[in-house]
Amino acid sequence: MTSDVESHPADDDLLAAEYALGVLDAPDRRRVEARAAMDVAFAHDVDAWAERLAPLALAVPVVEPPSRVWSRIEAALPATPADASSAPPTRAVAQSAAPQRQGALWSSLAFWRWLSFGSMGTAFASIIAATFIVENAVEPLFATLVPLGGGPSLVAAAHTGKGQLVISPAGSAADHRVPQLWLIAPGELPRSLGRLDSSRPTRVAIPKDIRRELVERSHLAITLEPPSGAPGNQPSGPVVARGQFERLSH
Amino acid sequence: MSDDAPETAVDERPRVRGGNRVPSVQREHLVERLSAVAAGDRAALGDVYRMTAAKLFGVCIRILGNRAEAEDVLQEVYLTVWHKAGTFDPARASPITWLATIARNRAIDRLRTSSGRPRSEPIDEVMHLSDPAPDALSGIEAADENRQLMECLEELDQKQAHVIRTAFLEGVTYEALAERTGAPLGTVKSWVRRGLLKLRSCLER
Image (cartoon, helix red, strand yellow):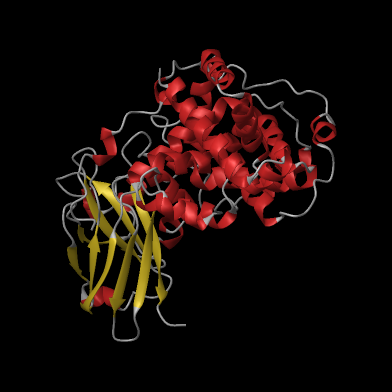
């Protein structure tokens, strides 16, 4: 089956159809998914086939699942934070928060969901996957940023000198918004690492006082922000990609 | 390689047919509930579950042929929905297609990891073990979309339509289709691929 994936590059749409139909074996499914994560046009082909074939799935007879399934789902959901209601954090809270020690809020799933929520119906496909390699004094770190939305473009990975990283976003937002890179160290508010150029690789200098924060538990995120800049220098737009630092050598 | 990606690449492609469907009340409600799930609303996930679980359980059972495995996969499906609801874009997919696609992909992946394990029960028995549930989704998809696909399947050669239906509903590989039909692998691939291409052109008419 591998040969099929690789020997018909011209017929991407057919490959997308085969994936959506479900005839590919596991390795080929993983290849198709990896491709879709990096290629927005191909991802749209896959989505289009899912939509074309969907009436077949919807024609399958319904079967009521036993109640234990929902009980298990509920039990597996993350616990509601004790210090907050289940309502998503508001922007006012975010902006008035002390710059430090708001980790529970900023690292919480609800926070990320809240950011993502604003992106419904917008072009997610702007930023895809980025790999950062950061060389710091201790040991190299890297982060792969995973797109949160449907169609990906792709992003290159690069490494420059100490305390710097290079990100190459592919494509750009469908509207006027500008991608901005954030670093979120545990227990701290997001800190902007600067805005990214949609058309060319952007070299990002990491301030020295942040560099020590580049530990394995730090997150990176890219949001789409107004051209005038993120209000209050805090993320306001949808998260289009995020990832976590890891050590390069194990 | 990324630098010269055209900035308009995202929006140049035609919208999926489903993206422009006439909204139905149920569909809009489901979209709204998914938005609430994306915002971290657990009760909204419960609403989505109540509206869709029987349909998605049916899809999983059809593919897995095993209720216990289908229950596991159904649980995974809604946890995936919890985590990924923020990525659902109602402009690009209908909510039920988005959900059904998650269910199918999860079930197919489970099927692949357990390949070689026989179905525990004949599919007809598995499907009919429970009383028919009210189909909360019947109004979500426009009936004429369903009819159009069925009509286009009717236009295919019988063998093409058969392998496409079987592959879709049971999530089986080309190899398994070849075994079942007794036809050579290359022949089965040809049936499927030609059928898919004809289907596409029929649906685009």
